[in-house]
Length: 263
Image 1 (cartoon, rainbow, N blue to C red):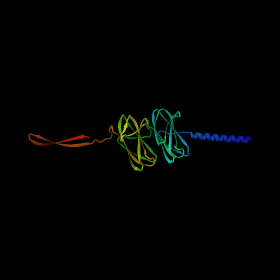
Image 2 (cartoon, rainbow, N blue to C red):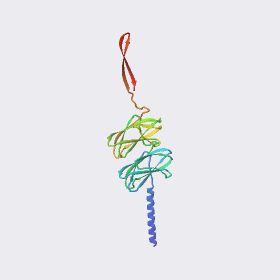
Image 3 (cartoon, rainbow, N blue to C red):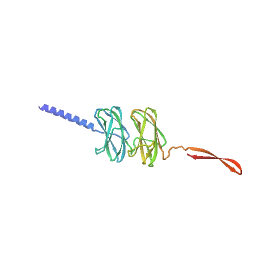
Image 4 (cartoon, one colour):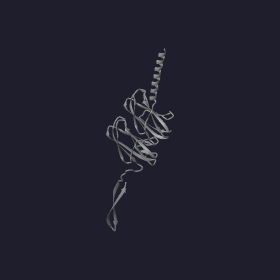
């Protein structure tokens, strides 16, 4: 009886230890750095992965999760340092205004809890730029989407609120269908009106470029133009010729006038 009791106790002890180990691994969060792409995977149906990052009050944040293989449909939940859920979405990206300073937790899992696969997760601070490529007004910047699922970030700054801007994005090679979104430093998406963006506040802006289906690769060209404050503009002169016929002392004299006016 004593041996049996000891054996039962030993088995129970092992079981508790294994469960504790599993739980500790299940709730262990992976820190993610701003601007860095971190690969992850849902290898078991029902699995949930936790990630953490830190932010300052009123930071704007963008979190992207893109499936790279499998049949999972990534679902994201965001919690503040008090454990309060502040957002959830099943799109590949979400933008937020982080009210409080502290550590935030991102939970990633399959939307239906019936799929598995791999994915890339990235946290981008839109208030304090990190690992973004600065672009110059009026200059075309080449880029590429490779491998599939890649997302590129670019930034520019305007010193005056209310400026109008044009952002052109065109494919140059491959099969990718490049698409862009624009965000201000508060984490709010800026949508265009007839392809013209209104920069309602001064400060930094972030452009996110990706393939529309997240399943193709290719090259592209990106151009930002500030339409209010001309940059890299070429002055065009229009030459106008006018002829005047004057009558002087009964004589007809042809006088040629040449005018040059800027357009």
